[in-house]
Image (tube, rainbow, N blue to C red; front, top):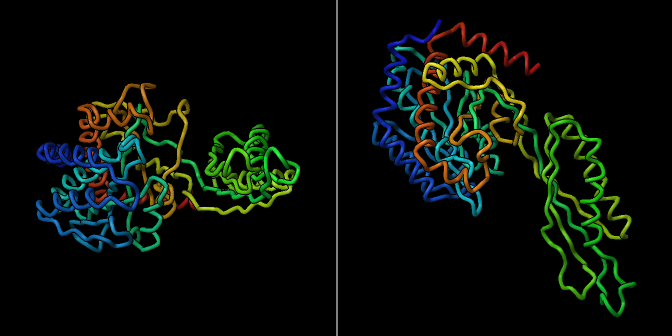
Amino acid sequence: MPLDPKIAKDVDAAVEQESAALSRLATDIHQNPELRFEEHKAAAWISELLAARGFQVERGLALPTDLRASHGRAGGARVAILAEYDALPDIGHACGHNLIAAAGVGAFLAAASVVDRTGGEVVLLGTPAEEGGGGKIKMINAGLFEGLDAAMMFHPFDRDILAHPALASLWLAMKFRGTPSHAAAAPHEGKSALTACLDTFRLIDGQRVHFRDGVRVHGFVTNGGQAVNIIPELAACEFSVRARDAAELARVRGIVERCAKGAAMASDVSVEITVREGYRDMRNNMELARAFGAHLESLGRHPHEQDARVGAGSTDMGDVSHVVPSIHPYLAIVDENEALCHEHRFAEAAIQDRGLQTALSAAKALARTAVELLADAELRARVREEWQRASS
């Protein structure tokens, strides 16, 4: 059953009523970028805004900078709207998490204003440390996603897409140890850790022809030696490995590790490899994504359902999508191909009027989708059935 037009109108009006406060929140977070696990100001500003509107906010449930607020009747259907707010090193909010936070808060406030008419409960989860910290994974492990019928958020981009892949990922750190010697007087006495480190990059490049579509392997040297006149005793590097699913991720991880071991053997040095688990692939729930898309269309935006022309990254929202039906749509804050996430131009756009207006549109569409799901048992059943099929 489509959402009652009167409820949709009231949701939009609630977002507009909060537009100044939401723009201020997005601006404050943008101008005070905080790295993963350190988002104390952002979490405090969100909590203060919610408290000022009469909501009780729980803090520090799984992480010092996470938060939760809820409204509605407990015991029935429950939908979570997610807010991210961490920044990137040096480049700040070049992923637009300040806009994600504002949209999430706005969507929660708007949905909460009508949830007594639809039934169910709407939840806001403040989810720190998406940028390499896996904050949502820690919140999953703490049980904060249990009992939810769906979870949703939006992400800024250069185009509107309802359902886009996110790659499964992990990080491999490699430490090579050799034998130092005088690089001029006795180079034959040394065993170069740096040679093995650099050969690892060359061997991985030689294996790219065997990677499936969607695989991404990229790394950098974290320690390139100790002095120019010493055969390097120690060298180190780190690689990010990504693939469309867990099976291909495991296969490519094996290739990368063999390259490091082969390079170490060739230089007669040792290598120590440590793994840091990353994120799971994204299971976009199309029933829910299309419901969001219909609301977005009525707000005057015309999203692609999918768009294979643009590449994919990784997000811990992928992990959420494996435990609860989820969507992670993308909405444009710049023109197509003008800029992408993690670029300086994108950081600039995340504080400009177009970005702020996009956050408000996202808040309206997310709130409408959330309350429609709470009001419509048949839609919830279709969403759950699709998720269960994908999980089997």
